[in-house]
Length: 349
Image 1 (cartoon, rainbow, N blue to C red):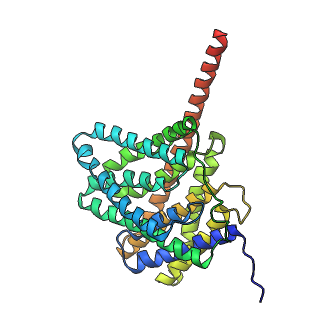
Image 2 (cartoon, helix red, strand yellow):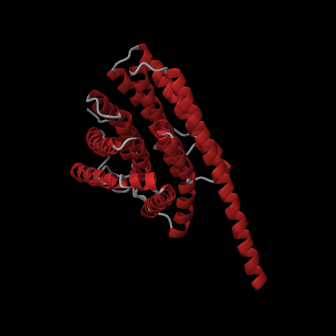
Image 3 (tube, rainbow, N blue to C red):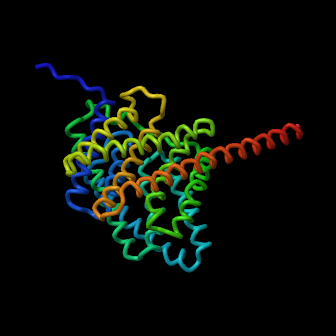
């Protein structure tokens, strides 16, 4: 019997879809704390280009990562007693992490960026949340590694093709500017989140994703990329919620999110030709998870799902509009600065 050939891009989309389904079963089936955060961290691992991490190495990284995240909890006393110094130090740490990720080409650095932005905000709300959230983030990385290994066994790449996809880093000068731009996008929302951590925790996750996405876009296409991906994610979350409401169960939740991940993955990995870049689809999937997860929690706690969803969606759109404006202003300022330097050089000659 002749085997059906599957293109590597199709395999990548299928691995993402299956991995998301397995992550949902683990996070929600085992009733892990903040299960949607576990799914988000798993998606960050699953979207990593190139071959999947070896299971042993991934679990080791998850353990080291948990320790590093706990170190981020040391920022909490500094933010509570010396707020200005704590904010400046946080900005410096985030800039360094953004810069390191851009120059090394390692997308998993974004996991640390997300963690160092979340942990201090959670700690300001309640110290006990630091340990719980650090454990959740580490478990998310471990679950992502596990489901990535399982899905890679079921949909393996052809021999020799796995090592071809390598991501090269950016030159330091370019990476420095992009890291500065991403940090300036994240920090205002980070400061705002310190005033009401429970309300803005999901907004921090969204802003970090926007900071990464805005790093490789220009001012002309930033609106379509940042705001468009947010609206696409909100639409996919609404569709998944409508399907889930027909038969509320863990199976339906996993199947609907697998369908969303397959649609996003087809655009992310180039299986389906679209007018948008891969970062558009990864951010849309990210937005779907951080909108649908809190909606499920609101339903379980007896809160208004519609009101909470509208508030979060409005907040995310506002954050996306701010990121768009920030990209436009910074690029315009940079253009004027380069023009002035060019005029000065011309005058000296």
